Length: 263
Ligand SMILES: [Fe+2]
Image (cartoon, rainbow, N blue to C red; front, side, top):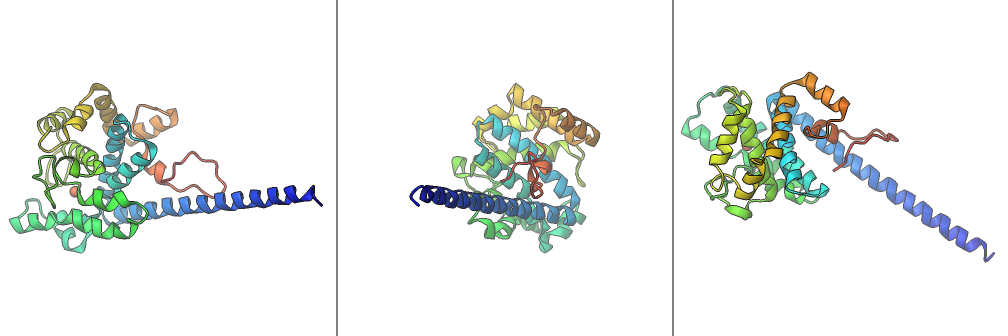
């Protein structure tokens, strides 16, 4: 009997490890599915915003990687980027975003509520992703304290929001919108250079404006504007192009060995 005891203990331990692994895997899948569902909700309500947040996430991840963030921090940046504008879907704002080409002062004030409206929507996820609500609330803050809604200054602005603000501004300049034409890559670089230390974190601005980061951002921008090129890059496994955000978020099917990353 004495020889049997260690075997039974070993089997019980293996069972526990297996059950824990299964539990964790299911929790990761549920988390990824929740994020994917939220992203689908944005797409279903406003496809332009859905495309915008994906481009912003691509650019933000490039800057985050260049800043040396670890995997966990990069996922935080990615989440804030993907959901930074979810507050624009609020019923009180959709008409303004979809119909007004020039904003009245009252409409402008209403638009400025979207970071806090978004943070409110995401508040139930704070227990799991503490950075998400704060990052989304702060994505229009500016380094010099002249942003909104809380006039946060410098490093009081969460890192995720500081990174996303570069990507958001870059995309706002380089992508055509209902009320403005797309401007050139160079115009976007000039705007970011001019905003260093006022709108943008100066250290991150130097990083964004560095040659290797600009090369990756430009490549990601061209890829985002060219769907055929995007899938060709993916097939080639082009490591210098931006990560494919949609691919990252798609939950793994049961038993699959795919290389999807989970949050
Ligand atoms: Fe915004």
